[in-house]
Length: 439
Image 1 (cartoon, rainbow, N blue to C red):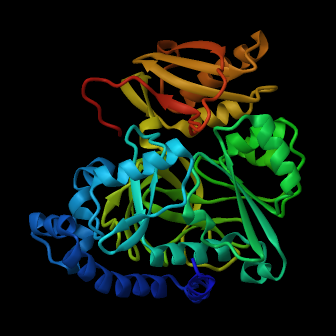
Image 2: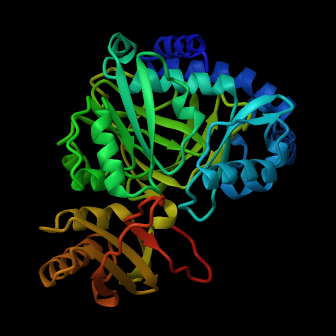
């Protein structure tokens, strides 16, 4: 990608830093007016949703939400570049098998970047990004993640990406002063440690579990910034990774770039480009329903995410009007359904994360609901002391969350080594009742 479009996108993103909430919402309304007219004219699936709901485009916020499964079911008529789901999946999977991620997919409307999500919510998603969208993504990320923003390009930066799959999307911001190296998660850990140490990155980007493993294996890095992606960044991970340098996180999914850090390290929703409706689900958590006001190759209009967010009410010292994310606490599928005094209750994953993060000498863990009243705790290390402390901490957390610990069986065992290339999920639920409703 040429540098000029990326630089212009970054400068435009600087212009769109709103300090007033009313001005931000007026900007969203202006974008939505033109964007939705274009999308409805070029995406038969989006136009069909408005017809089925009997709604004009001006009432787009009343459109019934869609989800990932519905997006994939209508993929062929949803995207506006003439790509079938079969073509997109074949291109992305071939790239992952060969580990050659550079060639774009040629479409009737030009080349597009294709990628896959890891499918942690049970459904593997696919995304399409046009060159224009790639330039805007690159400019926005460049401004947010480089120390000093665009002024950071006055010095050379070396970016190390630890990812399951490389993508031209990540390399699109490259220049003489900004170089990238992809460190393939499927390669042996000692090789990664040796190579990244020799590379001496100024920015390190990757899932926190992977970065922790690289750190524990002996990589003594001194980057200007550590950027957490792909997984929930928990407090214990942030503390450990801070030994390398300041730690920030990016919230990105198949559905787009959803939140970026400000100069104070606070995570803000990308509301200059994406409209967020937030559905309350209890426990102070919200589930986003997004409308991307920029993406055209693969439109996302009133699309419900699997993730749950906890927001901050207080204004940020940076002065931005975009809302702050206190935590991405995990996907809705991670919410547990456990027996309570009056019947089943929902236990949100952050209750268990907070409890297990405080267990002395516990380096890593996973909690899995395996049946109606059973939890399996996978611990590293799993000693009599850590097992006893983890069990006690979880029972206390269950009581605080409204569950009945006496009706829940806890079993502790050793956490197995991670499978290369998979995303870590610390709180999961493999059991499903016949009819389920998350409260």
